[in-house]
Length: 320
Image (tube, rainbow, N blue to C red; front, side, top):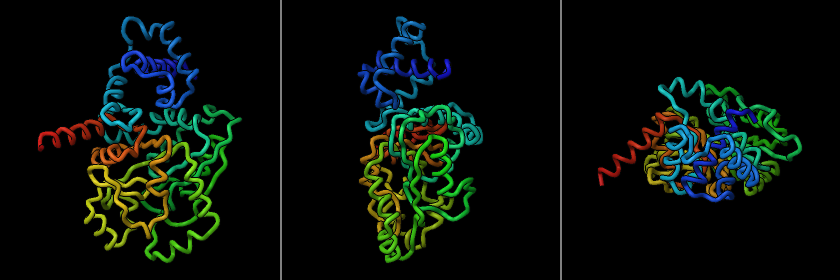
């Protein structure tokens, strides 16, 4: 591991251990590393001068920890400092890659959804960061889309690309995420290859996901019939994660169950680590909903988005 990356990880570890009084097992789970490595990092932090009387750490790391502490289910937030949406879009993949790499190295069974942010992260992963001896399996978390919305890779290609980089086996879900006819879903669910992936989802260690808002810019939304859109509106849905829907309070909405092919909400909730890469002030409400729903354990975003989330929370508090 490069010296700068080790110094940053040592600083994060020291902050959690000394200032937030977290145990080494808890820190290991939060950062996606082994307990023994936590101990090594604490020793390194002391010997290298990261830890003196106080922790020598950039203000941004403390901001990340303070933000994560506001949400009981959020183990860590990685916040990229940004001055524009364009800068974030161009750099979020490189920023997220080392954090996602650590999560992957701690997992055996991995699921991914099809967000553009997820694609950018996968493209920035460094193959040399992954141990060749570990047996891993990668699967889609939802059916696919046809070409559109500037996808760089199709679903199967995205799974194959990640599997190639980390030395994993691949499982493909060769069906659409949304079907108009419920009977078609019933037929598809009888296919052995599809049914086996539904069983695999129950074993996931890690889910790497994007997050969607429900408007014309959403790939999911663009696939819905007018009747389906009216159902979302009637239920006040504002957040979509792997074709599961939530309202502003983070309440799961059991809707369109006969029309979507994706990991069920209860199986997603059971995944040990749910990492979301999401950014953009337009997604602030959706990310806040996902945090409240307990569907985000690790969040990778930017400073503009967290500021928008905090503004929403402040406005809610003032309106009460």
